[in-house]
Length: 247
Image (cartoon, rainbow, N blue to C red; front, side, top):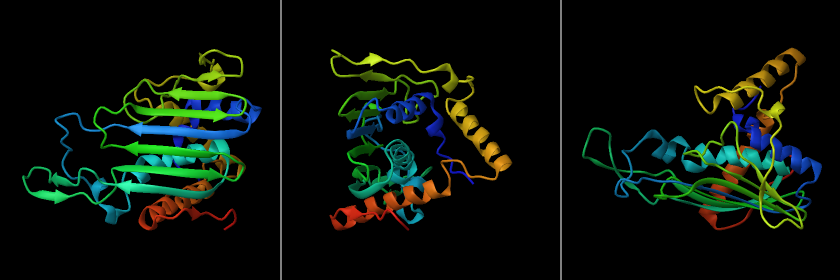
């Protein structure tokens, strides 16, 4: 079994994982993620959609933030505490094909802070209610190096063939780091998500053949859900929520 967090297999993210494991950044100080976009048509949100209904347990944190939380766990290991806030800034909506006013109850904006068992922390701000926002960017700061993955393409999905910037002590600026061709074994111009997804499917097939569940598997999904629930609980209570390493 696997979870469809296919962006683990985007080339820049795979290279970041390799560089972290090789010690490029050293001990983690902090990771900063920004995921900001919004309506540009006079600051008017679109019609009410299923994702705007909190009773369906969705919203921007679950729908998009979950992919980035999986990314952080993959890079830095288990999370031991979470705090955050959820907001719905554009709550008044119209129903599709109608002038009737309805209310969005699911979050359109979130912020969170995660602490890792191995040291360091991550902060993330995400919103689909930020008109003219800069969209996606990931920054990693450690004792021995910095890594940045800018996203030049619209939206929050990391590009299949991304750009990676880095700097070490003594460097005067960020420099583009090469991404090995082995991490970009083919191109698929039909959809930017397809190369990572096809690589995930290759792992799934390998798992069937070998009788294993490659990551991201159900355990990764369970751990991700724990963090999502902790952020929601923190938003409701105002407290930092501890996440046990076992169970």
